[in-house]
Length: 163
Image (cartoon, rainbow, N blue to C red; front, side, top):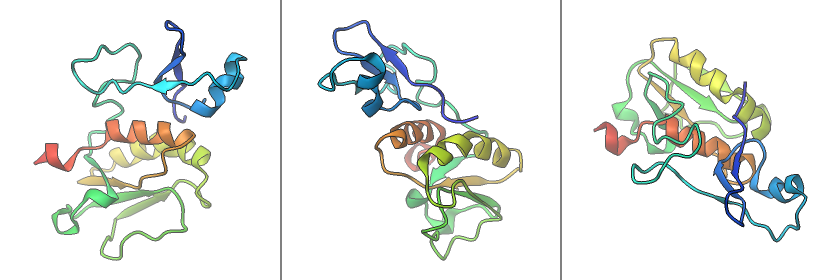
């Protein structure tokens, strides 16, 4: 089970991605059989004043019960005793002061296709452990990284909204 499918609206002249997924923005022209000049634009439906025209576009969707935070947004002194980290590769070690009780590496070499494939299973598995928090890395927002970050933003608990 990985990142869900891309949802594409063809209602307007310009195709519009309403939910990014495994078919990336760069793939759309090839999928539609049109010239590369056709540009797809991702519309973020996370605000309450925008109609949700696709499943999976609510601001808090794909959210485990356990609070999820991006590693770069947390203050280690405020972490619960039991927390886990989801890493996208082994190449970059997490901050030294972080000592999780569980760590999941989704791809040995940082392949975002592998990350996308295992992300929800990792969140679901860690959510069952009764942890105080799940920390997750970020990735570059290009190709499938757009869909990964979209799902993670919907799953994370913002530090600002949690306080």
